[in-house]
Length: 439
RNA sequence: GUGGCUGUAGCUCAGUUGGUUAGAGCGCCAGAUUGUGGUUCUGGAAGUCGGGGGUUCAAGUCCCCUCAGCCACCCCA
Image (cartoon, rainbow, N blue to C red):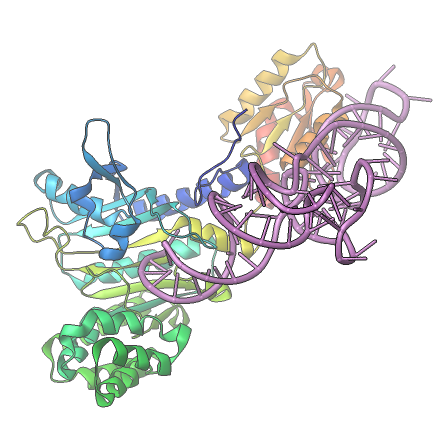
């Protein structure tokens, strides 16, 4: 016998896990669509040359790569942004600009696993391509904010920054050519503290202590967003790019405030840098305040030239990616996942062995109103059927023996309270809807 | 990829300094005089002690390898 098992970092999803997963996907889809983002899909497998070298040496190492039986050098996508770049380069003429798309799909990374980190996981990306307008940076922020509200979070923080202020500052300090190294160190600020970040910068770039002090002084600016912004503006004064970044940040923050995003949910955080090199403007990371240890659950940013490797056409854009599986791990730990193992709300008991046709008709009637119903497949004892309904997490049971059917009725049993009422068959959908509205 | 910790029934774990037929709780299945679950009672199924090799008269218990999980580094969703 072959031992049934799954690969490291790859998982099966049982109904209890898959139901909230699908619900989350539905929510993301609904929010994205409401802003006019259109769905696309791309292949899981691409020519390796398409994917290689786009996310840095680290992502190259993490790529699942092999030769197919035709001898082609192929690799599995490790994010949705690089395939998007190829996609727009290939189809720009048909798409028209600006182009807004969302893409919910699985990606693969052969890195070491950890809590909330898998080798196969799903991302829910949305991007606006073909415009440099700050309006799109603002909209991106609003979408992320609305997305988390729609999922059911209230305690979260969108951290926002702008690469231009960082690179502007580094230019000004004469560290411009070491930007990547400095940003990588800065990214760890929250985790290891300013002193160690300073040490790392010195070690990797040979910066002077004056340079390090300036960087750290900047990165540890604190206070309200406005106060930090003033500090940022002062620090980058005189550097055109830095000033531009500060102005962009100011525009995003003020627009979001005007749009009703509470101040405590949008936090200017000049230390976040994002690992990926292609970001050039606004940067986003989203943290759950009750579970910040799990890391960012939705990240993104603006890039000047997404598809430069595939086309001469310059395609700027901005977007973000919801880390569905990491978020689900977090929600599970926070006890936010219901444990129902059925997607249907109601169970019709197969009570009287002779009345299957009536049960099927009842189920069809309820389904027609948009409520999910399952008919128990065997005429077992009622107690057993109710036990099944209870364990699976059905909200209501529909019980009709020959007595009820003779009267054209059915018992609608509330499995949460245990009470039941006799209802005319035609009114059953409405009765269930009332119970569902209660929660 | 590197380092540390862990791995006993579906789940959470107990298993004395290596020594008779490996246990518990929860869950699961079936019953408790033929139409009502979540409580209770009774009974039942279920473990090659992650896998492989070694040391020993004897290994769940010691050693090595391997696989998987967790943590740190790295990176990131």
